[in-house]
Image (cartoon, helix red, strand yellow):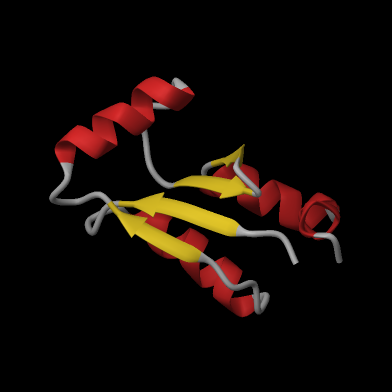
Length: 84
């Protein structure tokens, strides 16, 4: 199975939703909470061009945020990306 990483902050409702969706689907993931790490959060924003969290990566490739995760799940694209 592909490696899933999710970058979050503690107060982000979309981060909670993304983690819940992954958990409901039985998809293991590594969470990187950047709540108290503003330099790392800024570096992530500069790297991806995204200003918000969550940011979800599959095998190092940015999938997007919660909306993109949900759309990929509903379309079946998520399973393909995960190699299922």
